[in-house]
Length: 90
Image (cartoon, rainbow, N blue to C red; front, top):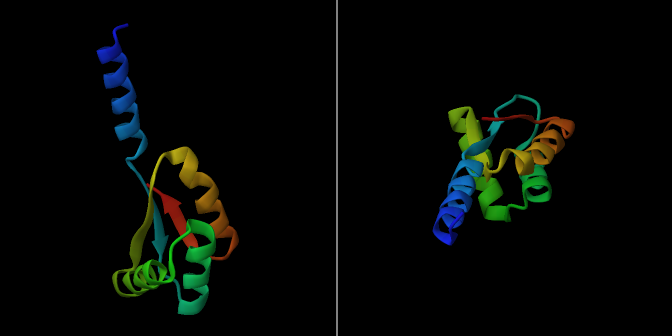
């Protein structure tokens, strides 16, 4: 395999690996502050990003809170669910 073919394969794998989204859904149980704190802790958002996601979830019913490789999103999704939030990977 040539260097060009290898590089093309690696770049293709990187693009494919970043197609997944971690979606957070609205609920009537958790407070804004709790959702914000959880996004900061689990998804490593800064306060402003977490706050914006919380408002988007509240008004739109859902929000993509993280994108990336499926394998990297799984532990975050599980952590959000274990924290009592409704989340899934698409």
